[in-house]
Image 1 (cartoon, rainbow, N blue to C red):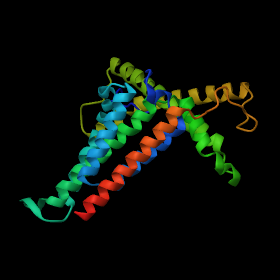
Image 2 (image 1 turned 90 degrees about the horizontal axis):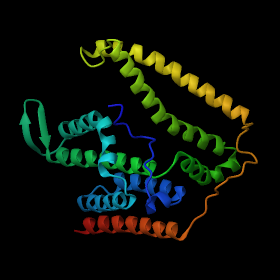
Image 3 (image 1 turned 90 degrees about the vertical axis):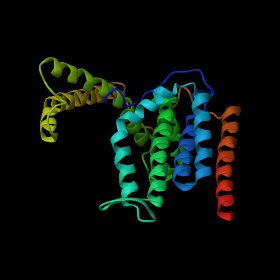
Image 4 (image 1 turned 180 degrees about the vertical axis):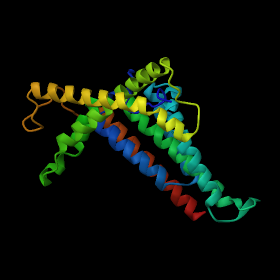
Length: 269
């Protein structure tokens, strides 16, 4: 399960998606997530699926590598689909005691499951094709107008970048500690919920100690390099839009226009 968590990981490849501006990828991911929860029709989801599959194909990131992140949230997916399937009122098509499946529940559960899977795949694709430094620079540029109302944009972007960097590091540390504890006879899988929760104590304590130690080392390193926030800082690689970025923006606008057209046509039929 630990190895199946792919948040914060970067997959190096020579693709157009990797070379796009991080601001574009942040905006595109945001619009993609909005489209998942706005255009909830059958033909709308066909358009979303074609768009997502095309982007994954162009990114040159193996689909099995992206889909590995779904294993970590399979329990959440099952709970969400099950609750929507049995608790949505409507025209029943199956009934067993107090449990019933309705046509509306079946449709809503299917759409909700697809939404969550596409949400994870689309968000993971952004982190797979963008380094943490690029995400920090892109987020800082997008939030730059908020500096006029005294929002610490650089510090917020830096915290998010550090958090993304620490996720794979802490997961690797967790895996090492778990293997070390299992070599000493620890059992993390057998028994009931309470026993499993108690068995995590030998894992959590050294993990927290390691996390605080790494955070202290990072703070000392930043202080030794005279880090004082974003005031007066320059960029070695400043962000600039290129022709491919403008083309990608046009593709995003075309994608949104197609979804809007599909929804209007389905409303007229």
